[in-house]
Length: 421
Image (cartoon, rainbow, N blue to C red):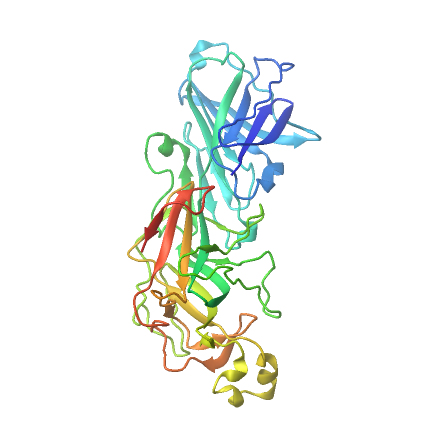
């Protein structure tokens, strides 16, 4: 894992890649030490390599404790250099201006991220997390509190922290099983909240924590960079190792991997995974309104290519009842089932933490989840007219208890410390 380090001076901003224990700092002696400059670092590597860095970041500062605002400054790139948009800003010579408090957030501007400084000494950000992982932003925040005098170098170190939670998925496949995952969704979780810099400083939770704050959203998670379409086959994920224990991460290891960056929250409104929570609709669907994981997949196991779903739709006993056009669309094409995974009694995500949900599919102790749709889905993700036999919405795919692992780690590490649900 790498840390991203940045050094901000009044004429330039330098980014460098460092080891866990190293911090790169550029000394710009040609700049006056009377100017307020920053050395800024992140606690852990950014999820996507900070592609939004062109947007710059924002710095607020108060003087005389939180008596009045001193700086409301923007850092932008001008040609080859980074600089204050409305600076430089100088350290006060008047001792009554101290202590000073500094607050910063990154990126400076981003869709769904609205900073507020209506009250002196209060810095909050109203954030709405986008549904599409490809357009989500890695929000960072930093502060430096109780600065009682100008530093000898004129420079403060700002340590930026990730303020969202990172959510990923992996699959634990049964020995010899071929698991084909088409879709993974985190359903019905809070997407809006207010981040309060000052609350965090006083030991309180920095986010509004109620799941009911704002609206709920559904976050789709796809295994490749391919943009999903209902007119072409969706990309699928098949674990490379099927041995009952190995966790096969669905996302890629590139800097453009599409893990989810979601709002930290504690939710007690989770789906119970029963036939009455809620009951199936007239068209054979269960549509939970509480938090759960949804997946569309199929399994080939123990010599049965149609163990869960179908490798070839033509093998379905009702295939002959379809129209000629439907048969042409589905011949030699697979069928997938849609299932839901209850999250247990509650869901808790903390800021700056990574959560890997490892679904057990085709293993000896796995059910594969709860059926939430009576109909199969085709390779394009469209619902078909072919139905699941001998099962109905609310039934487990297999008998037994639902099992999956949840790994909770620091942001940059995905496979440490296991919590079993």
